[in-house]
Image (cartoon, rainbow, N blue to C red; front, top):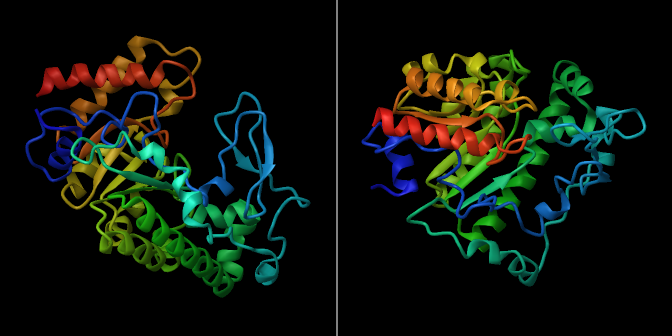
Length: 335
């Protein structure tokens, strides 16, 4: 029997997997443990927070997580926006510090103890990504307008964020020696990408080639990018960026067609929409139906069945585990 890591590599290389990769199993080292490393003195300055909290992170962004909602999001009224005028972004945007002593990094290393590189990937997580960081700072409306009205300034801001992330990447490599990056950056809504493919490539291809190229040059075997959205039209650019797995691809992307068209160049992880199954009135029958559909229509290669959520969890208790159980059942039927 292949290890979880080996089985994933067989899957994305079109080899001989002996079962479906079950959601995030190849990145999670023990039950109940997030597994993907998102713990260090740098990321601690930009926490996800908890439901009911409002706080200001190290970028100066006010984050709120109202009760009863799926997750946190920036507050973007006039008072709380960091960038109120894109022409003055250099005056107000201050990146989080990176100059932490080694002993501060050492405090987080206990989480690495369970990781067996033979069994799973030693994965680190980055969130938010470059695009998200821009609209976190200025709001989505102002962000989208600025791509048209002030493209040179947007290139400058993107370059500033990219350079900071590359310096952060050097520290992750130095202290953790990971072999997989799990990178969040939502590039679309449920039905469309936020930018046209041409504009997206103009602004984000080079920055992400630098970021993902750095990781590949420093021994990373796997680049996993999370975008739980429609971004099928951006897949050719994702391939140019060096992405190995697109995690979060919703059903609106027609994932089976993407697997047929691009399998072997990139793999797809998702196709079980949280909005469909991750709800208060979920049933085992509904989850069985969705898991069976996605496994049968996407097949054994270049595809990983998974909730589109950006981590090994669900909003409503029991959903993630129920999906995992059904994937195991489909492995027994199809392999």
